[in-house]
Image (cartoon, rainbow, N blue to C red; front, side, top):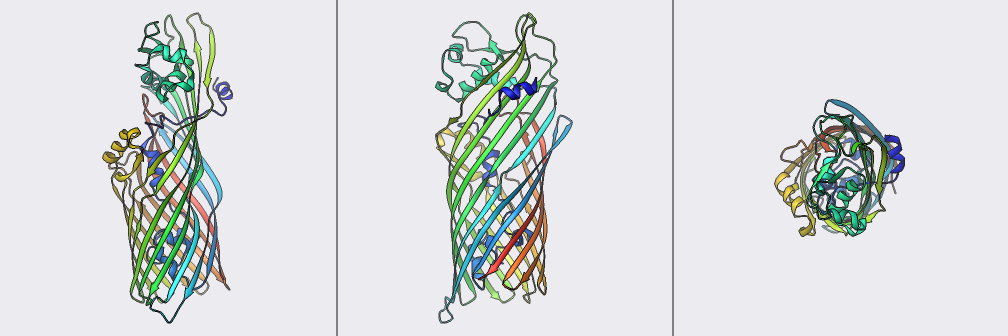
Length: 498
């Protein structure tokens, strides 16, 4: 029956109450930094705030572009592999997703003037896919308490029956649409058979032991194009700035399935299977800026300080939903019902991610090696969605539930003639005060580089791990699966001096 329902609902999909019920996790995933960029950058854990001299380093501290000696260009490709292990009511499952992507391309142009105190300037243009959003999770298990049907029944309470039966789906508000999907597929019935009834009873039998599956598939990107300027004063003070243009294109499929073998409801319909499919497209663009400074008090030491502004994203959501059920009537007849609808485009909204401060320290050893440390702070409680009147609840939740988070990155490099050996470490604190929803991240990386003539090729491997909760639905049945995500990425870059 599940396969039959899937055929009926092919192409149908969901986002839960995006106008009011957008989860903080959806917004936080746009605000959290990820280790992306060139192979050298990734191999050293992204600890480039005081090092510079790498195309992706300007994302940390824009003054870093001044450390290129010549015009320089880099192009990067990555193999992303994400493995998600899920634990739901004692049942363990896993899902793996792999993607090959051209994730970075950029160039810097260097100009020198030995007759001036401002003896060097640089201009750079760089594109980074700052967040690879391709991912797949699958959770399954037997819920001893709550049914998927609670989502529809809870939302329906208080809505008149004639609203659900006499109006076009597209004339209803979001909550009425959710209730309609359940009513149209017999998940619930009116408690009293009158047009003005506002109370409903579930046709999913009580007793628990609901077998449930949740599959979440996402594809897309969060890209950033940066225009950079930097300048050097007497080879001691280095200043820089970026103007950043952001591009977001995400598609998510949420598919929730449930079956039960409980006793039939006496004298009325009994739902034995439910499939709730939802597809969400999110597109938009945004803007941010960076300012940074690096000081070199002695030849072997660099100290950096950088500020990254909030990112202002203007986003639009398009949502398509469908529900399919199997039911047994009181006379023993068996029926399949389904209700699906064309995509609905919602009004644009704005997401403002928090700003970020980064302090950096790098020690350079005789131009043969270096060790670098970056420490960043970002107050996620400042995350906002606008217009505020439509998102008061989630903004209030983020203010109370999110916290200031610390990120630490450590990187090292050592050169042996034409070969460079690299290693990195990264710790990113959870944005939440209580980190069950979205836990701390720990990552390790390593790599090698080879220089030949005016060219260089770099290879990096990076690994990180984070745990998080993932609810099947936004309300009514919020029992979460515990997800452990493991990212294993291989990155290769080709660079040239010109």
